[in-house]
Length: 428
Ligand code: 4AD
Ligand code: MG
Image (cartoon, rainbow, N blue to C red):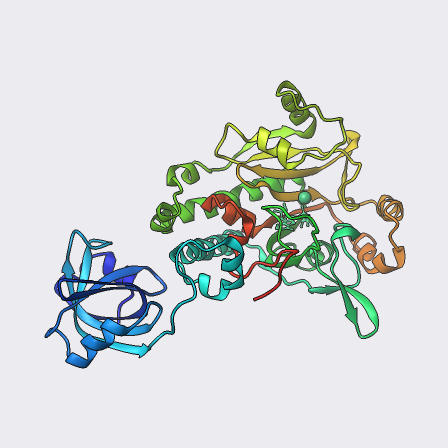
């Protein structure tokens, strides 16, 4: 048994091989049946002739509809006209199961394709994206593990949020209120005092009401936290992990990127370090472009797009205004109006990473929580991290689907994940 990818890689011409997969397309020309078969790795053409296979198998090949599952044996033959440069001359064609008429034919609406997402994920486009996704997840784990970070896991069900109340998903927990996690943030700040350097890749939940092309309500979050580290230290790792994922994808997914219409050279350019500017400098650049923002206002998609319009490589924006930032971000000792926080902004997707150094002063934290109208009682366990051996520490969070959206140049973030969750739907 070989995979399609292994056969197409070359070196098997003349060999008898067996593949297992699903019928992608069928065409009959001059009494020959050409069945294109896909497995999880790619597609290959198989050619079935009368007399080349038992009669009943020829009849089966004639009547099997697309997406029927098949086991095919044949000789690998060079054929310049076939996709991939070779085809299988079939000697044995077994239909495992005859598929009913597949509901997805040509030119269907986005909405319909979302209704039949469980079938649409079989498409070449979706499978290509998922293979890139596989590479990106592997690269992230590899990056942190190679550098001695421990993988540590936060709870998904939590008593309080870290990123503000407006995007919390509420849960009825045996008669009490609980919330789905928005970020591992608070738990990470406790766990670094156990393990020192940690990372995690897992789901986060945001009750984002707005429909945009870069928000999901359930997304995979890569987060890291490090003790004895400041903002600049962790920015290096944000740049490093993004670069590693991009380099891996260009190396391991050249075929996928080509099929998605992505120029690999654009992705290969993504190498640390990136360009750094402060929030205040960003406002000056925007002003020159005729987009004046008042100091203190958030950068929106519009502004993020302007800042990255002439580059293929993400940029880092640092030193955001203290106003409207999460309570745990550390004030800059050189300028109390800004916090030691940064975002990595990428072309196509905008904000890819958000991170900061964490405030150490328990009084400042308590005041910020009070200012946000939070119940201090629910944060006492968190404040213990500042009572027992607190040290300087920093970390960041990166949306994995945003990174995949960036690498695959996807118009909509929902295609970066097999079963997207958005305000409008949570099925299938
Ligand atoms: O900027 P955010 O909200 O930061 C945090 O959650 C921090 N506690 C992370 C940390 O320091 N450990 O979210 C981090 C990243 C964003 O930059 C974005 O890439 C992604 O998470 N993200 C989303 N991705 C998809 N859909 C959404 N609704 C997202 N919200 C945030
Ligand atoms: Mg953010």
